[in-house]
Image (cartoon, rainbow, N blue to C red; front, side, top):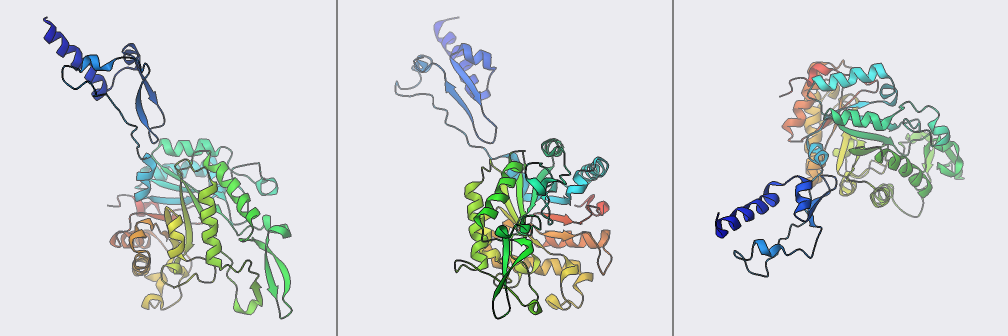
Length: 398
């Protein structure tokens, strides 16, 4: 083989290492080291011997100043793409902690078109479901191995969302320094809530973010805040929420979201929040601090709880919204898209799979899903507080 042919063969072999990849041991013999970090962070090839004269292979074809340069390639985490088309259901802490119920739910997800689950981290009673590290709130921790549970769902290709109730917390509120305060009567006597913690309190924020961080570290794909609001008060209650620092309720909620994004070591975990269904249509914050036009800038996804059974007669011109699930969902999402504009891609509504006045079955669940599709909203979640679902409604959902 003459020198020219030999040179071309050697050059092609070396070039193939860069184009096609090669065994790391073989690369090492050529003076290279292949370093891997998680695929969603980077994959890069570095020279392990900088003094090596790479140009000796390329000089006849390129100028002497030419150097091989393989820049870091930033890749998108697979779960971030998956988040764009979520079809999920809620799993309570009790259901997640019961091997029999959990296995049934896993099998139902696997045989259906579902691709996501929402698992309780902290519920509306203030109970932490997965950790023994938080005193009284951890006494009834139901989930023995959340890390293993997350890993098992992810192994099956299921996106895992952790739901954390924030400010409704009857356990934390037993301590007056963390409880929401009310004024009562003309004398403005101060009393402490026994059900709600104080959204103005940085200590309450930090307590919740400590819980969130522990769950994030176990491998969640997404963290979802619920009850990210102030309580609703009946006019006849005589109570007024004691506000602080001349900040509106909606400002406080946005401040919390900004703080959470700053303080959490998210490791590519997305953050979402649940909001009242009426936030899609009513202007302002409903008196509870939920203004989706302000919140959306600090969230990856926002989930209005559009349960037809929760709407008053004649809402959207529907005599009984509970028996018109398609129309209710479609009109609510139309209003939400108008409000959010370019941020509408962040919509991922909760749908109803439970019965109150009108019985909900396969027909009603499918109608809601169809309304989401027709609204050109990409994802949805099913809610049933008992974690019992109409699985037939989400099989062969074309």
